[in-house]
Image 1 (tube, rainbow, N blue to C red):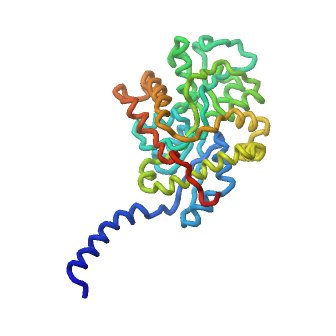
Image 2 (image 1 turned 45 degrees about the vertical axis):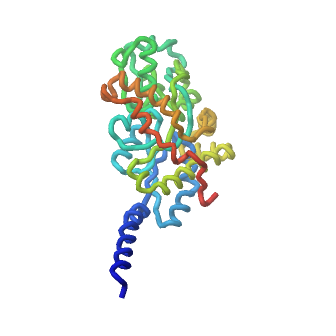
Image 3 (image 1 turned 30 degrees about the horizontal axis):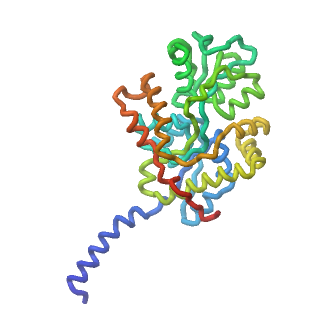
Length: 326
């Protein structure tokens, strides 16, 4: 029979290990958002790399299509996905408005958001759009880019008629003449130019934009190893697209139901060579934060600097994380 001291020691050891076991326990399923706007997400879904690695650990993968940043944030808030793609502006807005998410990876960095008009339209500047109908998707980078462009040219959102439409519907509304302009993004931007005879009226190249992957903060705290694995595979898909450009264009075209010339245009516009999240990324988010505050999208007393820092989590890209299948 064990002595009281030995039993006490064993009990203390068991208590010490209990929380470690709770943290180490793995989820039964990981829900990953994907979108035709982000080619790397399509490649990752097609290749099945996550299914291989997570399946080896007894974890299922659930893929959820997102039609825009606003939908991604809605899914993350409702816990129907654990990871999801959005614009960096939307990642900040979500955090500022109380959605506990973290920006963990850059799928692309791209300054500016284009405002397009029909090729034969008479409009030559943003000022010409006063009183006109402009399609945009609320809660997304292009929407806020539109607001910033209006402000730069002495207008506000009240000086135009913003028509709330998802990105593809906005492009079609422009092509059919239901709106005079559209605040867009890829791949609909390329479709509009190549297929719908649209042209860029304005783009602010100083506006720090880009696409990112977010994770639910609760999930990241509970399963940091799984987050590292998912990030490693998103990065694997990004590098694969860079190294196999023709195949990436084909996957993008097929997954998005795009013509190959459109897929190629959209893909080549993406700057994907700086995926790591850094503390310096807060500067770009602060720019968006000031815009959000100026239009009342966030509370007047929001600490923009703090929200920008809290949005970012550089830990998952601070050092290269190798996927087991590499």
